[in-house]
Image (cartoon, rainbow, N blue to C red; front, side, top):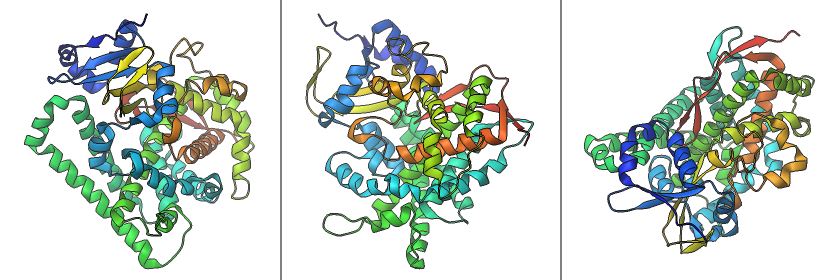
Length: 445
């Protein structure tokens, strides 16, 4: 007989509001351990409830088996969209399907081959900011690197660093505001009264104006660069019309936000884990030490770096950049014997699922070998680093190519160590590391 789901009260949420605002993951874990793989949370005085789950079958049901019954919730389509626009990440239904078809070709593997040279040049240039022989927080370095890779791949321009710095700053502070809104919805009236919402919406508009200027410069130049912006400018709806300027800006803004942040997070976590496990780091060095990327052989080299990829996958298991996935049901549904009404909001914890001891041996340990390709079909049922189903991240190949290149070039050049026993985490829109202090020592040539 199916056990009714436990509901965590509004009072309990309010009592824990400060720690939830800082880091909700311990609160989630306590309730999962106490109430099982799925439980409800009463988040408002009006009785609105959210269902939390780390159950693998439930996640597969919502994202894959019955995905047509689930849309992204207002957390993304309304709250996040007001800051980064209405595009692939923040839309649903026919609007999403149409724009997915338009954007998808830009991330086809054949198209990405042409961007690998630009990607590699950007990576090499940014690695000059790594300081040898001193402790350095690597997260800002990886953030700048990932941002520049996206900027160069989108715009193929050399003079955008200052503008990209402004865009990166706005993205960061708007995200911090959004987190306050999401985790303290009962204070929405106060944020509006103080003018916080208006201030950050104005900043979002500044970022759009900045991108609009860059796009107009490209159009005025009458030059084709064969970069991602060119592909988006050439994309057409079924009636032959091009994407409206506002929509184009929103799609570019979303590519920046999603494209650089999750990559920077994963690279920082991966470098920390390699620093903590020198024997694994040396295995990576033995694999990457003799490879040299060029425009002619980059795809072939990437395919050879199997163990490097496994290290990145294991890092994304332990620290999934998208640690929570939200959905809302379009109609009633029955899951694991429980009936759920239309409009039920789900929050699926990939952070918890990726550490579930029912699926992972030594779930808190860094063991890249568990991602041996022979096990791929097995872990595909409970490993979702880029999401799953039709809404899997459109840029997953772009991100993986970039991350393998970065790790390969860093480990070829440096031996990495750290005095930190653990890395602090900062769950915002994505799962960020906090103060990843590493020491890079030049390897002898």
